[in-house]
Image (cartoon, rainbow, N blue to C red; front, side):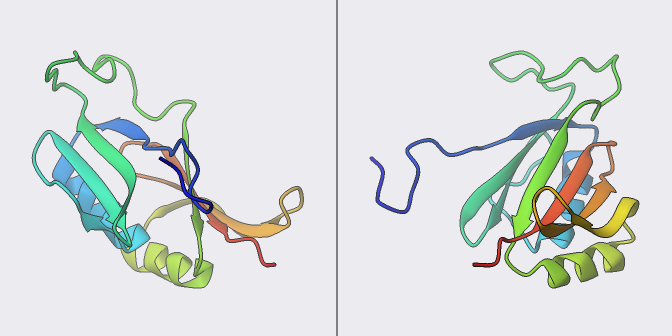
Length: 134
């Protein structure tokens, strides 16, 4: 059931990682998120009570098989993109975290907002984007 302000389909991205607790701590620090599940094999990251990302141990099969091929590098071809209401605070958290910067804060001329492009612990491209100003 959807409401006027809620889409009927919501993204719940899941990425395969080498170390779920370490990745969880990294994303929690970057996003100001909290653990919604916790554990060695699987994690849900929540911001304001909403799940924004799932982390899954690359080797763990659970009931469905592995999420990724452990023999292949993680992160290739994937951008994990977050729009942040307080972009400047998110940038500050990335600096405190010592996140590996790919492209520092810049204006995306196509979108008309500022962005910061990073790499996470597993090599995924992580983009922090400024929320649209109305």
